[in-house]
Picture 1 (cartoon, rainbow, N blue to C red):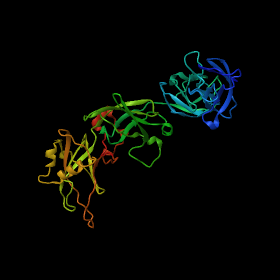
Picture 2 (cartoon, helix red, strand yellow):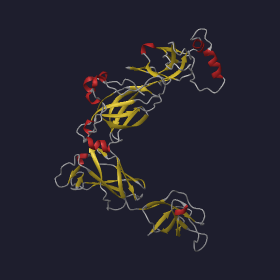
Picture 3 (cartoon, helix red, strand yellow):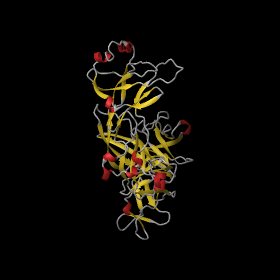
Picture 4 (cartoon, rainbow, N blue to C red):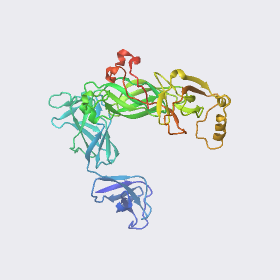
Length: 454
């Protein structure tokens, strides 16, 4: 077999074209050199060498025996074999793109995928029906991408009935009409309906636990648990962030029965807002990583940050007050939490949170007569800053709280870190599962809220 290599600038420097070669291979230890034949300045012909396995190799040409082209031309030795497909769940409207995964694929420009059934032939399209074949796109030597058919178009040839939820098998060819016979299963599924979420907002810098109640309709739950690749998608204008998810039963149970599944669990992404105002987003869920449903409202709040604690010291065994200067302490239906070292975590009461416009002079006099803030300011200014930079006139929040008692009687005290966050406990109000909350009739106010978030 001979191939034509088209290009420009091809020439020979002697009558035998002794330095004209084609080189096949992806690394020096693998290179195969084949003598080339000059047809004209834009065409070189080379014989295809024997090769031991399906693969795609770089093909380059030299006219001087030393310097080779680097134009990313490839030649493939094909023997397709399908190992897997993703996703396995396909939408009924035919909008899902499936990656056929395997070996022995080449970029022939003639790749196709065929959808079939192991026991009864399938027919697709309008009368007269034909084979269920789609043109596939070469992605790389291990992946072909194919569109799918709408479910109503896929019927059994013998009785003209819809394939419905029966398995559909996908195979491939890269040249001609001889398809693989590996029969990797695909399944149509019914779009779920979202009922609500345990939280409707979170600070942008906190990855909160998100539980979304789902009506999985008439889907085979064992099949969904095996093949679904759930995703949560957050969209705000041009911003799109996708988080991995999982299908679970909630409240949690040790029972592994797939029919109990009623919830999709994700963690919210870290989100950078455009300013200090809350940023509204749309939350969608996908069972196959491509086709999304839901359009729930979700809000990303200003980052939750503790900038300063004042005073920065107090007695170990006598309760004293402390002011926490930060941002993001206020959230709808829940507050932030403060963690005192490794001892305890407690909720910051929303009633103790006040707006604060930062002024350095006033801040340094938070505790009248105390010199520690001024000393801290001088010390922090003498080296590389590792604390938060505060802006005069900037909008922050101040919370006043009592400090916990230090319960180690053998210790004389010492420094401890003070942190703010969301101490998440996945509990449920009124003992209801997410699937029991129907926002279409109860409204958002009945969506159960998490106690806390991490």
